[in-house]
Length: 124
Image (cartoon, rainbow, N blue to C red; front, side, top):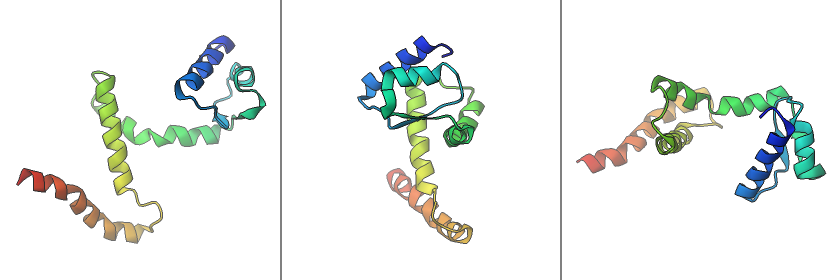
């Protein structure tokens, strides 16, 4: 997406598909995006172009990238959807954001047992 017309078409399509007008958009510093966002969303949407803000978004799917590169991609979009949904659920299950490292170590074994528990019941 390196021209303004393509950017505007993309933003209009995204708004139409989701039915949501974003409050803010974080992008890289591509010059075509500035007028495109202004034309499609007007002054109601804040455009952030700080590279560190965008980096947070990029790093969020870093874990998934490390898994699917080993698999050499997905056969189709259905396989990708199933993998990403399961990966996200498992990641959220084991994530302990507000815990100190020592607390996470203590809780990890119980989380693993809790995660394996239902599967073991099905296999019995």
